[in-house]
Structure formats: C-alpha cells, structure tokens
Amino acid sequence: MDKELIAMLICPVSHSELTYDRERQELKSSVSGLAYPVRDGIPVMLENEARIMPTEEKLGKAAPAP
Image 1 (tube, rainbow, N blue to C red):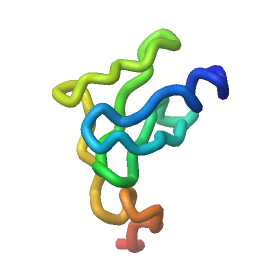
Image 2 (image 1 turned 90 degrees about the vertical axis):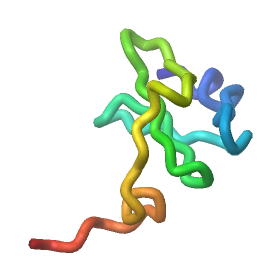
Image 3 (image 1 turned 30 degrees about the vertical axis):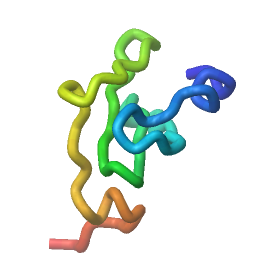
Image 4 (image 1 turned 180 degrees about the vertical axis):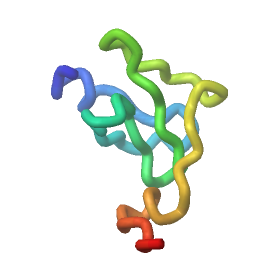
C-alpha cells in the first residue's frame, strides 16, 4: 500500500493516525482499537467493517504464550 496514501488517511472514529499491517492487510488505529481492512489495495474505512483489536494488540504487546 502506498505510504503517501496511508499518511493522508485517519481513523474515522478517533481521527488519529493509522498504521499499516502488511501481513493482515489492515490499517490499524491504536487509539480507537479498530483495524480497517484493505481489500484489493483499497482501504475500507467504515466502522461497521472494522475489526475490534484485542487489548494486547491495541497496546502493541505480544499475546501471552499458552
């Protein structure tokens, strides 16, 4: 995904910056705790399409080992 495009986008809920997760093809907002999907290179910036991130992911921490 284009870095310039990512820099222009903000979370529609929290109005905070987003980070791109290439592996999961998502734009993430640690402020709102939402991850917006990127489908065919197009960000889907709709709250009802976003995934709610678990607390550990939102805070940028690794999940505890089982």
